[in-house]
Length: 155
Picture 1 (cartoon, rainbow, N blue to C red):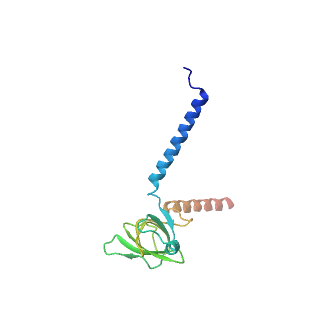
Picture 2 (cartoon, helix red, strand yellow):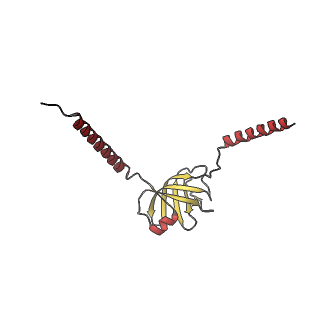
Picture 3 (cartoon, rainbow, N blue to C red):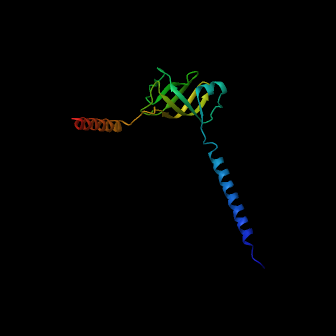
């Protein structure tokens, strides 16, 4: 019996590789299907609605004077706005240091009723000019040293 031609062997291996890649992709997509959290603004929620219990990310600005701490010390209620619509949010846990009124926030969680978003995670957003305090201090020291060196050079 004659052996399999090299051309047919390459074709078979190529087809097997394609089938394996497609299979792995389909498995990954099915595994991540329930983990995907879509991003919505309060305007999207009011206009289009969101199914109850579906994991989403709600983003916007924390409304001024809307943060209310519950007596248990870990539950907070606040409102998120995109400028046109507002959605009430409840979170149980420790919020990030950057979380405050009139600042950006992304809350991950789900709607438990048509009027309440229950957040599992709070992500506070900062502006582009944010710099860790340690770096800001070093930058200030560096700028002071550069200024004093330039002043001495000019004298």
